[in-house]
Image (cartoon, rainbow, N blue to C red; front, side, top):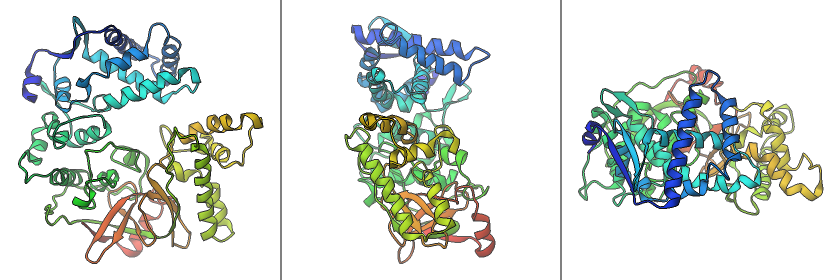
Length: 480
Protein backbone atom coordinates (compact mmCIF):
# COMPACT_ATOMS: atom_id res chain seq x y z
CA UNK A 1 0.00 0.00 0.00
CA UNK A 2 2.86 2.37 0.74
CA UNK A 3 4.06 2.21 -2.87
CA UNK A 4 0.55 2.96 -4.13
CA UNK A 5 0.22 6.13 -2.04
CA UNK A 6 3.74 7.36 -2.80
CA UNK A 7 3.30 6.77 -6.55
CA UNK A 8 -0.10 8.43 -6.88
CA UNK A 9 -0.28 11.91 -8.39
CA UNK A 10 -2.62 12.95 -5.62
CA UNK A 11 -4.52 11.30 -2.77
CA UNK A 12 -8.01 12.20 -1.60
CA UNK A 13 -8.52 11.67 2.12
CA UNK A 14 -12.24 10.99 2.49
CA UNK A 15 -13.53 11.82 5.96
CA UNK A 16 -17.16 11.15 5.09
CA UNK A 17 -20.33 13.10 4.34
CA UNK A 18 -20.53 16.71 5.39
CA UNK A 19 -22.19 18.34 8.36
CA UNK A 20 -22.12 22.04 9.19
CA UNK A 21 -19.75 21.80 12.16
CA UNK A 22 -17.17 19.58 10.42
CA UNK A 23 -17.16 21.69 7.26
CA UNK A 24 -16.70 24.81 9.37
CA UNK A 25 -13.88 23.10 11.27
CA UNK A 26 -12.14 22.09 8.03
CA UNK A 27 -12.23 25.64 6.67
CA UNK A 28 -10.93 27.03 9.96
CA UNK A 29 -8.07 24.53 10.03
CA UNK A 30 -7.08 25.54 6.52
CA UNK A 31 -7.19 29.22 7.51
CA UNK A 32 -5.07 28.60 10.60
CA UNK A 33 -2.50 26.63 8.64
CA UNK A 34 -2.20 28.99 5.68
CA UNK A 35 -1.96 32.01 8.01
CA UNK A 36 0.86 30.40 9.98
CA UNK A 37 2.70 29.59 6.75
CA UNK A 38 2.43 33.26 5.74
CA UNK A 39 3.89 34.25 9.11
CA UNK A 40 6.81 31.87 8.61
CA UNK A 41 7.73 33.81 5.48
CA UNK A 42 8.22 37.00 7.50
CA UNK A 43 11.84 37.97 8.26
CA UNK A 44 10.97 38.56 11.93
CA UNK A 45 9.27 35.18 12.39
CA UNK A 46 10.00 33.74 15.80
CA UNK A 47 8.57 33.19 19.29
CA UNK A 48 7.32 36.77 19.70
CA UNK A 49 5.44 36.61 16.40
CA UNK A 50 3.93 33.26 17.38
CA UNK A 51 2.90 34.58 20.78
CA UNK A 52 1.06 37.42 19.08
CA UNK A 53 -0.52 34.89 16.71
CA UNK A 54 -1.76 32.80 19.64
CA UNK A 55 -3.24 35.91 21.26
CA UNK A 56 -5.07 36.74 18.02
CA UNK A 57 -6.45 33.19 17.73
CA UNK A 58 -7.79 33.32 21.27
CA UNK A 59 -9.30 36.77 20.82
CA UNK A 60 -11.03 35.60 17.63
CA UNK A 61 -12.20 32.32 19.13
CA UNK A 62 -15.77 33.56 19.32
CA UNK A 63 -15.87 34.76 15.71
CA UNK A 64 -13.33 33.53 13.14
CA UNK A 65 -12.31 30.39 15.01
CA UNK A 66 -14.75 27.98 16.62
CA UNK A 67 -12.82 25.26 18.41
CA UNK A 68 -15.97 23.30 19.10
CA UNK A 69 -16.31 22.86 15.33
CA UNK A 70 -12.65 21.90 15.00
CA UNK A 71 -13.16 19.38 17.81
CA UNK A 72 -16.16 17.91 15.94
CA UNK A 73 -14.05 17.40 12.83
CA UNK A 74 -11.54 15.32 14.77
CA UNK A 75 -14.19 13.02 16.22
CA UNK A 76 -14.37 11.26 12.86
CA UNK A 77 -12.80 7.79 13.07
CA UNK A 78 -10.35 8.32 10.19
CA UNK A 79 -7.91 10.18 12.45
CA UNK A 80 -7.32 7.21 14.75
CA UNK A 81 -6.97 4.42 12.18
CA UNK A 82 -3.42 3.15 11.95
CA UNK A 83 -3.47 2.16 8.27
CA UNK A 84 -4.37 5.67 7.05
CA UNK A 85 -1.20 7.28 8.41
CA UNK A 86 0.82 6.26 5.36
CA UNK A 87 -2.08 7.36 3.15
CA UNK A 88 -1.45 10.96 4.18
CA UNK A 89 2.29 11.01 4.84
CA UNK A 90 3.45 9.20 1.70
CA UNK A 91 1.33 11.17 -0.76
CA UNK A 92 2.97 13.64 -3.14
CA UNK A 93 -0.15 15.77 -2.85
CA UNK A 94 -3.17 15.14 -0.65
CA UNK A 95 -6.52 16.79 -0.03
CA UNK A 96 -8.83 16.34 2.95
CA UNK A 97 -12.39 15.88 1.69
CA UNK A 98 -15.72 16.19 3.52
CA UNK A 99 -18.73 15.95 1.24
CA UNK A 100 -18.07 18.47 -1.54
CA UNK A 101 -15.46 20.41 0.43
CA UNK A 102 -11.71 19.83 0.04
CA UNK A 103 -8.67 21.46 1.62
CA UNK A 104 -4.94 20.98 1.09
CA UNK A 105 -3.48 18.47 3.56
CA UNK A 106 -0.41 20.68 4.05
CA UNK A 107 -2.56 23.55 5.32
CA UNK A 108 -4.29 21.17 7.72
CA UNK A 109 -0.92 19.91 8.99
CA UNK A 110 0.34 23.47 9.41
CA UNK A 111 -2.64 24.17 11.66
CA UNK A 112 -1.23 21.60 14.09
CA UNK A 113 1.87 23.77 14.46
CA UNK A 114 -0.49 26.55 15.54
CA UNK A 115 -1.90 24.18 18.15
CA UNK A 116 1.61 23.51 19.43
CA UNK A 117 2.27 27.24 19.82
CA UNK A 118 -1.03 27.57 21.69
CA UNK A 119 0.03 24.80 24.06
CA UNK A 120 3.49 26.34 24.55
CA UNK A 121 2.13 29.83 25.24
CA UNK A 122 -0.92 28.71 27.18
CA UNK A 123 -3.27 31.43 28.43
CA UNK A 124 -4.65 30.46 31.85
CA UNK A 125 -7.58 32.89 31.68
CA UNK A 126 -10.62 30.78 32.69
CA UNK A 127 -12.62 32.03 29.70
CA UNK A 128 -10.25 30.15 27.40
CA UNK A 129 -10.47 26.88 29.33
CA UNK A 130 -13.07 25.32 26.94
CA UNK A 131 -10.69 26.01 24.04
CA UNK A 132 -7.80 24.26 25.75
CA UNK A 133 -10.03 21.36 26.78
CA UNK A 134 -10.96 20.86 23.11
CA UNK A 135 -7.35 21.38 22.03
CA UNK A 136 -6.02 18.69 24.37
CA UNK A 137 -8.48 16.16 22.99
CA UNK A 138 -7.72 17.13 19.39
CA UNK A 139 -3.97 17.02 19.85
CA UNK A 140 -4.23 13.57 21.42
CA UNK A 141 -5.96 12.41 18.22
CA UNK A 142 -3.30 13.80 15.87
CA UNK A 143 -0.02 13.49 17.79
CA UNK A 144 1.20 10.68 15.52
CA UNK A 145 0.61 12.88 12.44
CA UNK A 146 1.87 16.18 13.76
CA UNK A 147 5.17 14.98 15.20
CA UNK A 148 6.36 12.44 12.66
CA UNK A 149 9.32 13.92 10.83
CA UNK A 150 9.50 12.77 7.23
CA UNK A 151 12.62 12.70 5.12
CA UNK A 152 12.41 13.14 1.38
CA UNK A 153 14.03 10.34 -0.59
CA UNK A 154 13.26 10.82 -4.25
CA UNK A 155 9.52 10.52 -4.68
CA UNK A 156 9.01 8.73 -1.36
CA UNK A 157 8.79 10.15 2.12
CA UNK A 158 10.55 7.89 4.58
CA UNK A 159 11.15 8.04 8.28
CA UNK A 160 13.14 6.09 10.83
CA UNK A 161 12.02 3.02 12.73
CA UNK A 162 12.29 4.99 15.95
CA UNK A 163 10.03 7.78 14.68
CA UNK A 164 7.42 5.25 13.61
CA UNK A 165 7.20 3.38 16.91
CA UNK A 166 7.71 6.43 19.12
CA UNK A 167 5.04 8.54 17.51
CA UNK A 168 2.70 5.58 17.37
CA UNK A 169 3.06 5.47 21.15
CA UNK A 170 2.87 9.26 21.48
CA UNK A 171 -0.41 9.15 19.61
CA UNK A 172 -2.18 6.93 22.08
CA UNK A 173 -5.39 7.41 20.11
CA UNK A 174 -4.25 5.14 17.25
CA UNK A 175 -6.61 2.19 16.91
CA UNK A 176 -6.12 -1.20 15.28
CA UNK A 177 -8.04 -4.46 15.49
CA UNK A 178 -4.79 -6.41 15.83
CA UNK A 179 -2.42 -4.62 18.27
CA UNK A 180 0.54 -5.79 16.18
CA UNK A 181 -0.69 -3.41 13.48
CA UNK A 182 0.38 -0.51 15.69
CA UNK A 183 3.79 -1.35 14.23
CA UNK A 184 2.99 -3.33 11.06
CA UNK A 185 0.60 -0.62 9.85
CA UNK A 186 3.41 1.95 9.79
CA UNK A 187 6.18 -0.10 8.18
CA UNK A 188 5.34 1.36 4.79
CA UNK A 189 6.88 4.63 5.99
CA UNK A 190 10.27 3.03 6.60
CA UNK A 191 13.35 2.72 4.47
CA UNK A 192 13.84 -0.79 3.08
CA UNK A 193 16.68 -1.55 5.52
CA UNK A 194 14.44 -1.00 8.54
CA UNK A 195 11.47 -2.84 7.04
CA UNK A 196 13.58 -5.97 6.64
CA UNK A 197 14.49 -5.96 10.34
CA UNK A 198 10.90 -6.27 11.59
CA UNK A 199 9.40 -9.63 10.60
CA UNK A 200 5.79 -9.26 9.41
CA UNK A 201 4.19 -12.43 10.66
CA UNK A 202 0.51 -12.73 11.56
CA UNK A 203 0.78 -16.30 12.79
CA UNK A 204 0.04 -17.15 16.41
CA UNK A 205 3.74 -17.82 16.92
CA UNK A 206 4.51 -14.11 16.44
CA UNK A 207 3.02 -12.79 19.65
CA UNK A 208 2.83 -9.08 20.38
CA UNK A 209 5.53 -9.59 23.01
CA UNK A 210 7.87 -11.08 20.39
CA UNK A 211 7.22 -8.19 18.02
CA UNK A 212 8.01 -5.67 20.77
CA UNK A 213 11.21 -7.60 21.56
CA UNK A 214 12.39 -7.48 17.92
CA UNK A 215 11.50 -3.80 17.64
CA UNK A 216 13.25 -2.71 20.84
CA UNK A 217 16.30 -4.85 20.06
CA UNK A 218 16.67 -3.20 16.64
CA UNK A 219 16.34 0.26 18.16
CA UNK A 220 18.88 -0.35 20.93
CA UNK A 221 21.31 -1.79 18.36
CA UNK A 222 20.99 1.44 16.36
CA UNK A 223 20.66 4.09 19.07
CA UNK A 224 21.98 2.58 22.27
CA UNK A 225 20.71 2.75 25.85
CA UNK A 226 18.79 6.02 25.40
CA UNK A 227 16.01 3.90 23.87
CA UNK A 228 15.59 2.23 27.26
CA UNK A 229 14.34 5.54 28.68
CA UNK A 230 10.92 4.66 27.28
CA UNK A 231 10.63 1.45 29.25
CA UNK A 232 7.89 1.38 31.91
CA UNK A 233 5.69 -1.36 33.38
CA UNK A 234 2.58 -2.27 31.38
CA UNK A 235 0.20 -5.21 31.22
CA UNK A 236 2.60 -6.87 28.76
CA UNK A 237 5.68 -6.55 30.98
CA UNK A 238 5.44 -10.06 32.54
CA UNK A 239 5.95 -11.60 29.09
CA UNK A 240 8.78 -9.27 28.02
CA UNK A 241 12.48 -8.95 28.84
CA UNK A 242 12.93 -6.20 31.43
CA UNK A 243 14.57 -3.92 28.84
CA UNK A 244 11.93 -4.29 26.10
CA UNK A 245 9.64 -1.31 25.56
CA UNK A 246 5.89 -1.66 25.08
CA UNK A 247 5.35 0.65 22.10
CA UNK A 248 1.60 -0.02 22.02
CA UNK A 249 0.74 2.01 25.13
CA UNK A 250 0.44 5.77 25.24
CA UNK A 251 3.77 7.40 26.00
CA UNK A 252 4.01 9.53 29.14
CA UNK A 253 6.63 12.08 30.12
CA UNK A 254 9.85 10.22 30.77
CA UNK A 255 13.37 11.05 31.94
CA UNK A 256 15.71 11.29 28.98
CA UNK A 257 15.02 9.71 25.62
CA UNK A 258 16.54 9.99 22.15
CA UNK A 259 15.69 13.65 21.66
CA UNK A 260 15.21 15.06 25.16
CA UNK A 261 18.09 13.11 26.64
CA UNK A 262 20.65 13.92 23.98
CA UNK A 263 19.75 17.61 23.91
CA UNK A 264 19.49 18.20 27.65
CA UNK A 265 21.79 15.79 29.47
CA UNK A 266 25.23 14.22 29.12
CA UNK A 267 25.50 11.74 32.00
CA UNK A 268 28.14 9.60 30.25
CA UNK A 269 30.24 12.66 29.44
CA UNK A 270 30.44 12.68 25.67
CA UNK A 271 30.67 8.93 25.11
CA UNK A 272 28.80 7.87 22.00
CA UNK A 273 27.04 4.72 20.93
CA UNK A 274 28.34 2.68 18.01
CA UNK A 275 25.83 0.55 16.15
CA UNK A 276 26.04 -3.08 17.18
CA UNK A 277 24.24 -6.39 16.78
CA UNK A 278 23.07 -8.33 19.83
CA UNK A 279 22.82 -12.12 19.59
CA UNK A 280 19.84 -12.06 21.95
CA UNK A 281 16.74 -14.07 21.08
CA UNK A 282 13.27 -13.89 22.58
CA UNK A 283 13.96 -17.18 24.35
CA UNK A 284 17.39 -15.98 25.57
CA UNK A 285 17.00 -12.20 25.68
CA UNK A 286 20.19 -11.10 27.44
CA UNK A 287 21.96 -7.97 26.14
CA UNK A 288 25.23 -6.56 27.47
CA UNK A 289 25.86 -2.86 28.14
CA UNK A 290 28.97 -1.31 29.68
CA UNK A 291 28.81 1.41 32.29
CA UNK A 292 29.52 2.46 35.87
CA UNK A 293 27.68 2.26 39.18
CA UNK A 294 26.68 5.65 40.57
CA UNK A 295 25.34 4.31 43.84
CA UNK A 296 22.90 2.06 45.63
CA UNK A 297 19.46 3.30 46.69
CA UNK A 298 19.23 3.81 50.46
CA UNK A 299 15.61 4.94 50.77
CA UNK A 300 12.68 6.11 48.65
CA UNK A 301 9.76 8.50 48.88
CA UNK A 302 6.21 8.21 47.61
CA UNK A 303 4.58 8.31 44.18
CA UNK A 304 2.18 11.20 43.60
CA UNK A 305 -1.06 9.44 42.67
CA UNK A 306 -3.35 12.47 42.32
CA UNK A 307 -4.22 13.75 38.83
CA UNK A 308 -4.15 17.43 37.87
CA UNK A 309 -7.94 17.65 37.65
CA UNK A 310 -8.44 16.30 41.17
CA UNK A 311 -9.84 18.80 43.72
CA UNK A 312 -7.10 17.78 46.15
CA UNK A 313 -4.27 17.94 43.60
CA UNK A 314 -2.53 21.08 44.92
CA UNK A 315 -2.75 19.82 48.50
CA UNK A 316 -1.25 16.47 47.50
CA UNK A 317 1.51 18.20 45.52
CA UNK A 318 2.47 20.06 48.70
CA UNK A 319 2.42 16.84 50.73
CA UNK A 320 4.61 15.11 48.13
CA UNK A 321 7.19 17.91 48.20
CA UNK A 322 7.24 18.02 51.99
CA UNK A 323 7.73 14.26 51.97
CA UNK A 324 10.71 14.76 49.65
CA UNK A 325 12.18 17.29 52.07
CA UNK A 326 11.62 14.89 54.95
CA UNK A 327 13.44 12.13 53.04
CA UNK A 328 16.48 14.39 52.66
CA UNK A 329 16.44 15.55 56.28
CA UNK A 330 16.16 11.98 57.60
CA UNK A 331 19.20 10.80 55.67
CA UNK A 332 21.54 13.80 55.45
CA UNK A 333 23.09 15.29 58.56
CA UNK A 334 22.89 19.02 59.20
CA UNK A 335 25.69 20.71 57.30
CA UNK A 336 26.71 22.35 54.01
CA UNK A 337 25.73 19.33 51.88
CA UNK A 338 22.19 19.16 53.26
CA UNK A 339 21.84 22.93 52.87
CA UNK A 340 22.93 22.71 49.22
CA UNK A 341 20.57 19.82 48.45
CA UNK A 342 17.59 21.52 50.08
CA UNK A 343 18.29 24.76 48.20
CA UNK A 344 18.24 22.81 44.93
CA UNK A 345 15.43 20.42 45.76
CA UNK A 346 13.13 22.27 43.33
CA UNK A 347 15.15 20.61 40.56
CA UNK A 348 14.05 17.06 41.45
CA UNK A 349 10.37 17.17 40.35
CA UNK A 350 11.31 18.72 36.99
CA UNK A 351 14.54 16.70 36.58
CA UNK A 352 16.35 19.97 35.95
CA UNK A 353 14.34 20.66 32.79
CA UNK A 354 12.32 23.76 31.97
CA UNK A 355 9.81 24.30 29.21
CA UNK A 356 12.30 24.57 26.33
CA UNK A 357 15.68 23.82 27.89
CA UNK A 358 17.58 23.16 31.10
CA UNK A 359 15.96 24.80 34.11
CA UNK A 360 17.50 27.97 35.52
CA UNK A 361 16.73 29.66 38.85
CA UNK A 362 15.82 32.86 37.02
CA UNK A 363 12.96 30.97 35.33
CA UNK A 364 11.06 31.34 38.60
CA UNK A 365 10.97 27.65 39.53
CA UNK A 366 12.49 28.06 43.03
CA UNK A 367 9.84 30.67 43.85
CA UNK A 368 7.06 28.41 42.56
CA UNK A 369 8.48 25.58 44.69
CA UNK A 370 8.15 27.83 47.75
CA UNK A 371 4.57 28.65 46.76
CA UNK A 372 3.67 24.96 46.67
CA UNK A 373 5.41 24.11 49.92
CA UNK A 374 3.81 27.03 51.75
CA UNK A 375 6.98 29.04 52.37
CA UNK A 376 5.66 31.87 50.19
CA UNK A 377 2.39 33.31 51.45
CA UNK A 378 -0.50 34.56 49.28
CA UNK A 379 -1.34 38.29 49.18
CA UNK A 380 -4.82 37.48 50.48
CA UNK A 381 -5.98 34.55 52.59
CA UNK A 382 -9.33 34.54 50.78
CA UNK A 383 -7.67 33.87 47.42
CA UNK A 384 -5.12 31.37 48.70
CA UNK A 385 -6.13 28.30 46.66
CA UNK A 386 -6.44 30.17 43.37
CA UNK A 387 -3.18 32.01 44.00
CA UNK A 388 -1.25 28.83 44.74
CA UNK A 389 -2.62 27.12 41.63
CA UNK A 390 -1.85 30.11 39.39
CA UNK A 391 1.57 30.99 40.84
CA UNK A 392 2.79 27.38 40.72
CA UNK A 393 1.45 26.54 37.26
CA UNK A 394 4.62 27.40 35.25
CA UNK A 395 6.49 25.01 37.56
CA UNK A 396 3.94 22.21 37.69
CA UNK A 397 3.50 22.12 33.92
CA UNK A 398 7.09 20.87 33.51
CA UNK A 399 6.94 18.26 36.30
CA UNK A 400 8.15 14.74 35.55
CA UNK A 401 6.61 13.42 38.75
CA UNK A 402 3.82 11.30 37.22
CA UNK A 403 4.73 7.62 37.63
CA UNK A 404 8.07 8.41 39.30
CA UNK A 405 9.38 8.00 42.86
CA UNK A 406 12.10 10.06 44.62
CA UNK A 407 15.09 8.27 46.12
CA UNK A 408 18.32 8.97 47.95
CA UNK A 409 21.56 7.04 47.48
CA UNK A 410 23.86 5.45 50.04
CA UNK A 411 26.87 7.38 48.72
CA UNK A 412 28.67 9.78 51.03
CA UNK A 413 26.93 12.77 49.44
CA UNK A 414 23.45 11.33 49.93
CA UNK A 415 22.59 11.99 46.30
CA UNK A 416 18.85 12.56 45.74
CA UNK A 417 17.06 11.71 42.54
CA UNK A 418 13.85 10.72 40.79
CA UNK A 419 13.36 7.25 39.39
CA UNK A 420 10.70 4.80 38.22
CA UNK A 421 7.69 4.24 40.41
CA UNK A 422 8.91 0.77 41.39
CA UNK A 423 12.45 1.75 42.43
CA UNK A 424 13.32 0.07 45.75
CA UNK A 425 16.04 0.27 48.39
CA UNK A 426 19.17 -1.66 47.33
CA UNK A 427 18.53 -1.05 43.61
CA UNK A 428 21.56 0.22 41.69
CA UNK A 429 21.74 3.51 39.82
CA UNK A 430 24.10 3.17 36.85
CA UNK A 431 25.22 5.19 33.85
CA UNK A 432 25.67 3.21 30.65
CA UNK A 433 28.35 4.25 28.20
CA UNK A 434 26.66 6.21 25.41
CA UNK A 435 23.60 7.09 27.49
CA UNK A 436 22.53 10.60 28.40
CA UNK A 437 20.74 9.76 31.67
CA UNK A 438 21.28 7.26 34.50
CA UNK A 439 19.20 4.11 34.90
CA UNK A 440 17.93 2.04 37.81
CA UNK A 441 18.69 -1.68 37.62
CA UNK A 442 18.06 -4.57 40.01
CA UNK A 443 20.42 -7.46 40.70
CA UNK A 444 19.35 -11.06 40.31
CA UNK A 445 21.32 -14.29 40.49
CA UNK A 446 22.68 -14.27 36.93
CA UNK A 447 21.89 -10.85 35.45
CA UNK A 448 20.20 -7.51 36.04
CA UNK A 449 16.67 -6.33 35.42
CA UNK A 450 16.14 -2.86 34.01
CA UNK A 451 13.75 -0.81 36.15
CA UNK A 452 13.86 2.43 34.18
CA UNK A 453 15.54 5.82 33.64
CA UNK A 454 16.44 8.14 36.49
CA UNK A 455 17.47 11.65 37.38
CA UNK A 456 20.37 11.87 39.87
CA UNK A 457 21.27 15.31 41.20
CA UNK A 458 24.84 16.19 40.25
CA UNK A 459 25.26 13.37 37.72
CA UNK A 460 23.29 14.56 34.69
CA UNK A 461 26.18 16.34 32.95
CA UNK A 462 28.82 13.67 33.47
CA UNK A 463 30.31 15.43 36.50
CA UNK A 464 31.31 12.13 38.09
CA UNK A 465 31.30 9.66 35.19
CA UNK A 466 34.85 10.35 33.99
CA UNK A 467 36.26 10.05 37.50
CA UNK A 468 34.48 6.77 38.17
CA UNK A 469 35.74 5.33 34.87
CA UNK A 470 39.30 6.46 35.64
CA UNK A 471 39.19 4.89 39.10
CA UNK A 472 37.24 1.70 38.42
CA UNK A 473 36.95 1.24 34.65
CA UNK A 474 33.78 0.22 32.85
CA UNK A 475 31.70 -2.70 34.07
CA UNK A 476 29.60 -5.04 31.93
CA UNK A 477 25.93 -5.31 32.85
CA UNK A 478 23.95 -8.24 31.50
CA UNK A 479 20.32 -7.15 31.17
CA UNK A 480 17.55 -9.66 30.68
